[in-house]
Image (cartoon, rainbow, N blue to C red; front, side):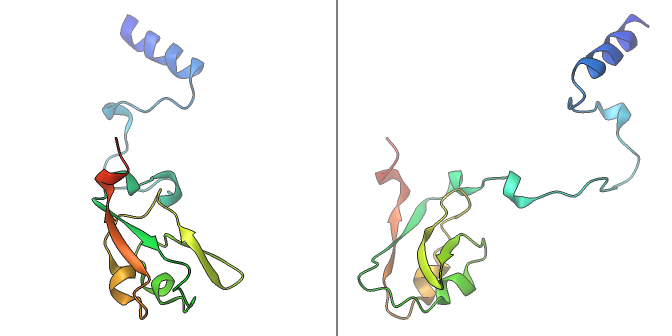
Amino acid sequence: MKLKQDKKQDKAKNPNAKKGWKELPIGTLVLEPGSSLNYKTGDWRTFRPETDFKKCIHCMICWINCPDSAITVKDGKKIGTNLDYCKGCGVCADECPVKCIQMVEESKYRK
């Protein structure tokens, strides 16, 4: 009985605490909306795209084809890649008509 009281007190102290398995609803219910912005997925990539902006013609084909919406754009021009969300799939480099995007091994950046 003391354990239940402790849990209630903990919940009152920290309303954002995760629920225990006994408090979860039965079934596969989504009770609140999620957002992929909360889950940065770029940490596990093996390769990262690097753009040579001297060659880039800002055709936006990389932006259209990026499955992670990681290409950053301003005023209709590519300005970079959001590495917090880029998974390093290389679609942008494969689709680039002027081949200004090269996939570079991530280990060269991590030390």
